[in-house]
Image (cartoon, rainbow, N blue to C red; front, top):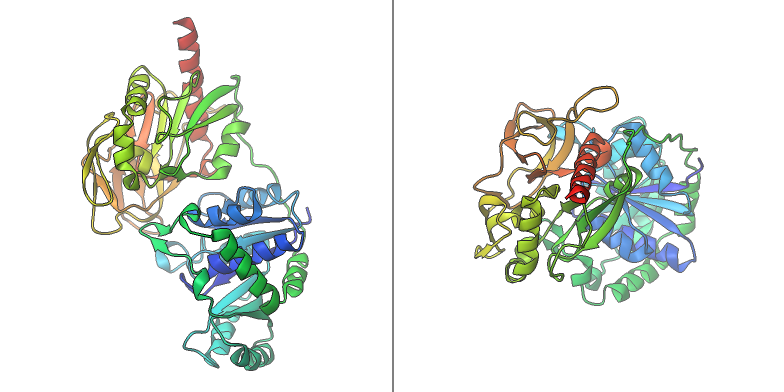
Length: 465
């Protein structure tokens, strides 16, 4: 499949990747093009900014979560109707698992998908050293895929001189530059950027940035590089064979619960789920007729008071789950299920009450990064076997949270990759899998398959009752 594509990368975090990517996407939309967008790595917030620009859901590409074939499939599948795919990198271009490997880095995604990369160079405090920076990144790996350079935070006069130096000494094309644009900065919060809906005049800021980039970047050259990407060889991954019918799944989605991968939703649909979105903040009860519940992560600590006051919703969740409604809860959703949940200021609030204990604020980022989870005890996967008679096997996931729990669970073992560090986590019962880890379902489709099997069983029991 021919997919014109470009990866926007940088030497480190805080180099302007998200802002510049959004500006490029907006400029392409303004030209009448239809871009698809992607984010490397386990990130929920950056894709939300992409979505605000292009109007369709942005996706994630992650070579730890999924095999090479699946990553290529996700890219191809979600670029079918697009003129060009724009991929935003993660961290520094070569920064991968364990801090000493390139696995799951932005470079790894470029390598696996054979995508040309445009390297952002933060030139603040640099002049000729920018050329040495480019030379090092371009040649650190023989197949670096770095085809172009974008100079960030540089004046027009300095840019003209640096462009000549870099192109002559490094043999790479300079696509253009981005001047200092103070009124288009995106602020950060404890888990990343602030949410798009919290930024005043976001649309106006993006339009202004796009107008600037239309003048300072050679977007035709960028599109030319994207068009030179070779055809993408992508095959759909083999999924579990389900023998049940459609099943209605309620997914929490509002200001407090918004961290969910779009491809998780798509995979659930492929396995027979009918998705019904609801808001624990604004609705009074769960949707009628659902056979399963997913409480994803997000920022419940910012809305703890409102969640606490909405007792009809919390009590309905507690009652229906105690009656056997299957539930998957990740991070923020897991915090909400506690008897007590602290808010961002450390004030306690009453939660749903399914988890005995308290979710509380800590002063620093806790367990952070990729993990592989295996079932050690508990009942969620007790009866699960795929069509070959196999259990679920290891499940890739990740954690990042400033909160902890007095009862984080102990049924699964989390193993850090390229490390001997491991710990126990997650509550696993017949109908509930709840803990801090976030899952990417394509990483191991046994998880959504097992969940939907429980949901179908619950639905049949409800009909009998």
